[in-house]
Length: 350
Image (cartoon, rainbow, N blue to C red; front, side, top):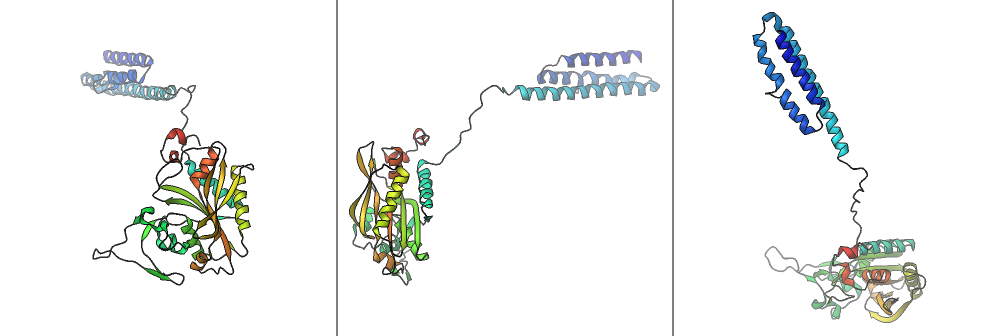
């Protein structure tokens, strides 16, 4: 019995010495295999119980269990210590951290937000409408006749009409009290003026809204033209509205957004949906030339009549400016194509 107790004590002492020398989780795993594993030194002592006298077995068994439990507890404690130390040592708190890569709104969306906020301070609400439009809202209600060049299929993105169940082309028509029969052809809207019509259909004067949104025209791409671009539309309808209100609002906007010293000019022009009409230009200092922002004018009486607003009682004005051109003037950008080329070097500047 004394020999077995000595062997147990030797295993216990050797395990304690090895455990004190453990410096890593790899060393600790080697310790576990050597002493606590299925073929370890502690398990190797168990068969010796069969050689011990019956009356001595309880004492020897208790000694073996005590050593096994003590070594297991010491192993778990050392493992927790090493794992904790490894986690801390794995992070160098003195090393500069990685700056999180935060996204940002596209420069055009930033400009839209700026414009909506500016006109909001001037008392304008915001409206929106569909980008796929019918001819009534895109042309008819805006006093653009069938013969007008703006309705040429080559100058628009017309969409295929819906088909009937038998596969033949289906001519869809709808009527209302203001316009009678409406043509069914659909197209990508060519101007945000379509939303003017939708606003006036649903809301009676006074009306004071701005309408930012995408529009589509098959233009040749160059430094100042794209086939998809953004417009900011404004519409005011009320009693006694005049051209003076239109010009003063535009001048106030230009000075508030581009600076008090910014030069702006109005050139007589023609649009079917306004009368009188004008083009609005802003001076590009870096280019040393005038750049057109868009058109404006007094809402044509036919447009008011198309939405059941009495032109004898109400008048109004509207303008449509290119948001890309506003952004180009504001941030000295010389090529409109930069907005859609997805060059991160350009986009990160704003």
